[in-house]
Structure formats: C-alpha cells, structure tokens
Length: 631
Ligand code: GLC
Ligand code: GLC
Image (tube, rainbow, N blue to C red; front, side):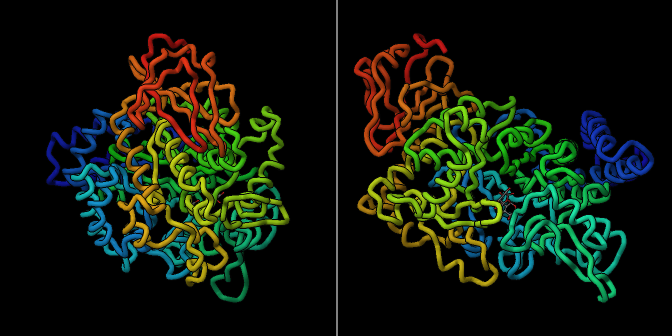
C-alpha cells in the first residue's frame, strides 16, 4: 500500500503538501482498512483494493484545487460551522427554476436576498433523455446534462457561491446508475467486469427469493425489485436488480471494485467544489437474502468508509443522509464518522399530520424523544421536498398516545388528497398500492396547506410550518417557490417522461407571477413572503436557535406544540398552535418561567402572569431569562 501511495506522488507536490497528506492518511487510513475488512473480509483481495484506493486518494488530493485545500483546513478548524442559526438552505431544479447553470448564477442576488447559505441543486448530471427520474438516473457523474451547462460551469458556480457565503449541495446518487451509464452499457453487452458492477441473475429463482422480504418502492413502474433485460446474445432474458425505476440499476457493493469506482466519482465531484453531498437512497445499498435489504449493517460500514475517504482526500465535504425510513433507522445514519447531516422526515411528516388533526401531540412527542443528535451533527429540517410525503412515524409511538397507526395513515392519505370531509388540502396520491394499502402524498406546501382550496387559514399554516422548521434547530431547507406560495403544477404530469409519477405536481417551474407579487402585501404571495422573510431575519439574530439543543415544554394543551431552545443566559420558548382557533396556556403552567417575556416576532413584552394566548395557526418565539427555569 505504501508503494501505491508513493507512486501516486506528482513531481509538483512539495514536501510540505505531501506531509499534510501523509498526516491525513495516518489519521484515517487505519479506519478505512478496518471498515473494508469488515465488509469484504480481510485477505488478499481486500488489501489489493485498498492499495489501489489509497493511490487514487493520493492522486485526487493532489488534484484538489488550492482554494479547496484552504477550505479543508478552515473546516477542520471549525467542524461545526454548519450548526449556526445563520445557516439557511434552499433547493431548486436548475432547469425548472433557472433554465440552466447560467440562470442559477443570475439568481444569486435573489438567493442572497433570501439569506441562503446552502444551495441544493437537484441532480443535474447526464441522464437518459426522458426517463431520468428527475435526474436520479445518472449516466455520468462527471458530466453535467448538456442542456444545463458544463462541469466547468458548475465548478465556477461553486466558487462564485462560496464567495457569497453559500455552500453548494449536490446529490451523490450511489445506490444505482442509469441503464445508459457506460458501466451499464458494457454490462448489457456482456463485459464480465461490468456485469459484476450490478446484480444480474439468470432466471427468476433468486429474484423470487429476494422479493419475498423486500418492499416495493415504485410499484406503478414495475412490481418487485427486478426487471428483465436481454442476454448479451439477444436470445434470452436475464434479471437485474432495480429498486426504483426499471432504468435505475442497483450497484452491487458486494464487489469491492464498485466501492472503489464510486469513491473516485465522489472525489471527482468533491474536487469541483461541492461542499455537501446528499447521499441518495442510503438505506438500499446492501442486499442480503432473507432480509428487507434496507439499512443493513454493511450499508453503515460502507457510508463510514466513504466518509473516511473524504476525511483523507476532501475533508471539507459533508454528507447528508437521505433515509426516509422508520425513525429508529434514520438516526443510525447520523454521526461525525458517517453522515454529519440528515433530513428529518419524521418532523416533516408530523408537521403535516398535526395540521390535519389540529393536534400537536405526535409532533411534540417526536421532538421530545427523537430530536436529540450526536455532537457535531445536525438535522436538515424541511416542510416538504421534491418527493412524496410518507407517514414514517413509529407505530409504537402513536400507540402510546392511543393512536392506531394504520388507521391514522389511512386518515392522513384521505385528508391530504381531499377525500375527507372538510379537508383544506389538495395533495395528489403517489404510488397508491391497493394491494399493500401503501400510499404517499405529492403536493406543494401551499396546495397542501389550503391555498389552492382557498382556505382562510392557508397563509398562516404555510408560515406556521416554516416557523417550526426554522426554530427546532438544524439547517432549515426551503423548497424555492414555496416562499411565495407556489401551487401544484398539474400540467407537469403531461410532460414527456413524467408518466405516472405524480411527484411532478410538486416540482413546478419558476413561479414568475408569484415572485412578481412578493413585495405586494395585498397578495397571498406577498403575505407569505414577508412573513417568512421576517422569520428568517429574526432567526439570524437569535443565537439560542443555533445547534440542536431542545427541551420540550408541556403546555397541557394538545393543540399546542411547545419547546425551549436554551442559550447561555436566556432561552427561547416556541409555542405553535396547530388549531383553527386561539389556544391558551394558563398562568400556572408558565409559572416556572420569569414573568416578563420578549416576543421576538412582534417586538412586544409579554406578561406571562396572565397566561399566554396563541392565535389560530399562530406561533410565538418568546425570549426569557433563564434564571427561574429548572428543566
Ligand atoms: C431518492 C430521491 C428520489 C428518487 C430516488 C431514487 O429517494 O429523492 O427522488 O426517486 O432516490 O434515486
Ligand atoms: C425514498 C423512500 C421512498 C420514497 C422514494 C422516492 O428512498 O424510501 O419512500 O417514496 O424514495 O420518492
């Protein structure tokens, strides 16, 4: 291995640079070796792969631009830089929001106006023309979709964003490639090296065996997890693992060459100046017969190995886990040695659940028992994403509150697609599976919250949902367009390639009309925008809202969700009202707090000796001195 690393030394590399790299190897290579031994078994094959990998890491580190080496050092000196209350994320589709990468560049002044410090560009790599699953079927990790721009433009954009204090986030779609990736084409043609990159099976025996225990992800596309492909001679048929769409082939991480190849693709992206990689579909990367093939121990070991790769060759880079699974599993991906960041799908789903039921208890319970994180990590909190909303709360948590989980999910699905009397919501069913009873919900924040239906509480609900994600800690992530109340885009369902995928209703194009109204307070867009901007501004100057420390506060009122965010000498008490009428907290309940509270959102001083009334779908952020509080 030493030889492989030494052989990778470029003539231009100075002794000082080389010793920096050697120090990183010294700190992290042992861990990488242990992880690979654990996954692949110690022995000659694993050692050979590790030596090749180590050489690759040395090369990649030397190719890393000087600017990024400086960033590596800065972030190593300040490893929790992303936990500040000034962090604010935004996510957009390059094509739908801005046309192309040049359009994203032109949008930077607006992103700054909004206060963004984190920008997630939805997958923008080369992908099959129509069948691309919104870019999640990647044909080359090293090429930008030519209709959006070039890799050089992406690298320039990263630099430009960095000078404006905005971190660039892109997806690392490492569970699968598209069936048009060079590896997949070679495999289709019968090249054994690349066949071994995927899961090819000669007949239905093994697929049937696996499918006995594996869940169906996109049943509208194909049943089960395998799709037929022709044998190389074109005469027969074989089967390939495809968890998602038939054109997204799962990579076979049981082959260590796959890990090494994907590490190279990852470092290529890191060296373009990407700050955060969104680790797509982490739960699915390891398969084992007789299991659900989700969140297996090896999936974690592999993520940790990718993490170690970054610590050596691109230490500034962070991982964000995309695990939209049971909360006990979500948490397992989060750690400084695995993914430092993770979506918080439970909080997201329960915000919607409480808006539907006007009952905050499930959300309150989740904040109480499922919000804590290991040091040095953070949630990414969001109201909705580009995907569907699935009801991923734990059945046993619901049962403790006397809620039947299956019945509650059925209610939520009916409520959010407007099949429940009095519903304000205009969501669309996604992957409705009558056979398993599974169904998820597509829709924009505004349409789900009642704006499309003309419900009087809609604007308040949009603001309330955001006020929660902006105050629970972690990086709040706005789906750009939601801040001006964009509605579902039904026409998107007719676009080529969108087929049965109803998630496209919640991926609208740039809502020019709504943006034009954003400074007009007589419009819904203007009202949503002004109030969200205000929340963002107040949050920026409220240091108590940094980090993740949160202590729930029992209001004895089931309609209210309440929590305290402690600072050194003060704390911020957040009280959110999920109901359609004002709700009260009585004076006795508040008697542990000092009587004078400062309402951070409207600037008033509130006397808590009179109790506290929160308006219909309203929220207060109150600052009090910590003296009198014992938690
Ligand atoms: C993730 C993405 C989703 C995509 C899937 C397959 O869940 O968020 O949009 O369909 O992975 O890549
Ligand atoms: C994710 C989730 C699944 C979701 C899908 C895409 O990986 O696990 O529930 O529906 O990808 O939307």
